[in-house]
Structure formats: structure tokens, C-alpha cells
Length: 290
Image (cartoon, rainbow, N blue to C red; front, side):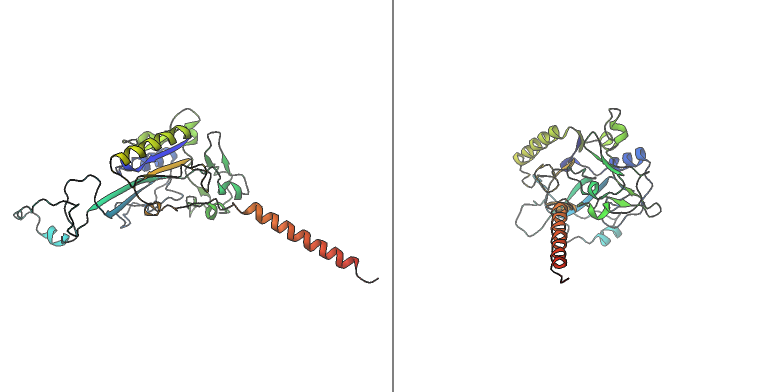
């Protein structure tokens, strides 16, 4: 089971953030705006298991008929003139006209733990606090976590974090308790536009591919899937996305790789080196004059 997040229909309402916090009793993590658009959390963390990104771009919306240029507008002057007689309306302008202007568009997307198929956090956890569920998701058992923090640098997405006053690691569980009784995760249940979809991964991948085809036909050529490929560096994500720009724009790594990928080879090389040293020591001891 997994998530498919279609960012093309995300409206930035943050219902998923609120539902996640309410159901999982996650503590408050900052109520002040960060200065990065309409954002008060900046990214995923121990107390932010769902994060809605607000990305502003000076780029026209696809199929937009007309727009308003922003580069030559003094917002402070405009604010002081509020209530005054309205200025004559400017002539309609087109964002596709070659006059050097650009338009403002918003990209919004709800980020979450990716529940990797090859999860490095599972590989490095020394207590078994992290485990793979019967639904294919990855869950932290906070009562077993000893706060070692090994899982934090192991995650290629920077999802897992420790609470400062707690020390233990926390992240999205995909509402494991709800799944066990046949309910969908709280964030997907609360999403008013079905931007967050939950279900069997095979079905979600088919649905996502059809959605990308639909958007391309509508002229949205930047639409692409992220994390859906089982042949990628993490074996495919249990939570994948439809994006409208490069992954880096959304703060996602372009080519994530499980950080423990080279561990088996490293252990083999270390064992070979140890065996070579032992053989060399044995030969040296055997040749020692008696």
C-alpha cells in the first residue's frame, strides 16, 4: 500500500497537515510564518510528518489567457493608495507576449516519508525500532527507539528527525493503526481535492501514468512522476509524486540512492583485507627462525 500525491491538484489548504497532527497527537512545531511564502514548518521533521510546500515561480500558468505583470509594481505604494480613487484599468496583456515580462505561478505539494522499498533506516537501526509492516510501509516504534540517531543520516530524503526534548526518532507511519482496521490514512481522508491518494501501489502507478498522459495532452509538458520506478536507487517509493517541475524545485533529491547500498561490498572488502593480514601474519610467524 502507498500514497500517490498529485501536486497538480493541490490547493495548499494544509488539511493533510492538520489531520495528521490531530490523529497522531503530534505536538505543535511552530505557528510563526517562516518568511518562505505561506509556510510555518519549512520541511518534514519529528513533529511535521506532512509538509505542504508553497513554491513561487516567475513563470506563466499553462493555458493562461491573460495575466498581470508584477515586476513594475511597487507594493508599498499600492498599499498606501488603498481606498483612494481607482486608477484607470490597464489594457489586458498576455503572458505569452514577447515583451520581456514573466508571470507568477504557484506550485504546491504535500510531502511525506517515502516508505522506501530499500529503506536504509531499517538497515542501520540497532534496536529493531524501525520495521517493515505487512502493508509494505516503514514504521518507527518509539517505545523501542534508543535515540541513537543512526537512521537520520541514513535517510536519503532527510525525513527522519529527533525531537529536541525527547531524543527519539519520529516520522510518518502512514497511519498504521488506521490501516489495521481497514481505514485510509488521515491525510488522504482529509484531502478535499484527492491530491493525496491511497491504495495498492500497482493501481496507483497505473493511475499516475494515466494522469501524466492527460496533463501532457493538455499542454502541461513539465508534468512527471517522481519515486514511482521500482528500478530506481531505492527500489521505488511507497509514497510517490506527480510534479510540475524538476524535483530540486520541490526540495527533493533528483536521483536518491539507498545510503547503505555499498555496505555489503564494504564488508566483503574488509573481510578480505582481514584475511590477507591474517595470512601474512601466519606466514611471517612460520618463517620466523627457531
